[in-house]
Image (cartoon, rainbow, N blue to C red; front, side, top):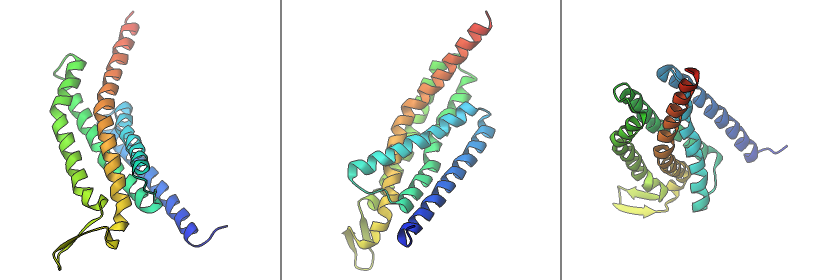
Length: 197
């Protein structure tokens, strides 16, 4: 049985897994009660899976290690960020569906109306975290900018996890969410056609 730092890492990993599961469960309950649809809640939470895949791909590409504590906290923080894009898209689609008869037109209008806000929030978040990813440190006393200072190394894993996961999930969200909404409408139309026969 390993002690010391290995034991601390295992405890931190178990705690973060429990925190992640509880956070997803609470988000699922809130989404189901707000949207009154298990499908919408599942679709919104699918962004969390896509963002986690993006984190792993980003860390593999850059050759950075997955730190259990900081990368794990980054993934949990990312889960709260990436669901916003799906919430905005699905809420806009649900409102437009009441006034637009054709589901395809409602989806296209949703994409047209929400593309700019989704991209702006994603780009500003990524640009805001880039100094942490690039390990840039500003020394206000000596008026110098340092790259790779020891004080910046602690935050690299957390910021990298958020940046890569958010970029990957946003790109996929703009494709997967409209497609999944159209799939639901097509399946619903097929089901209503069969039940009326």
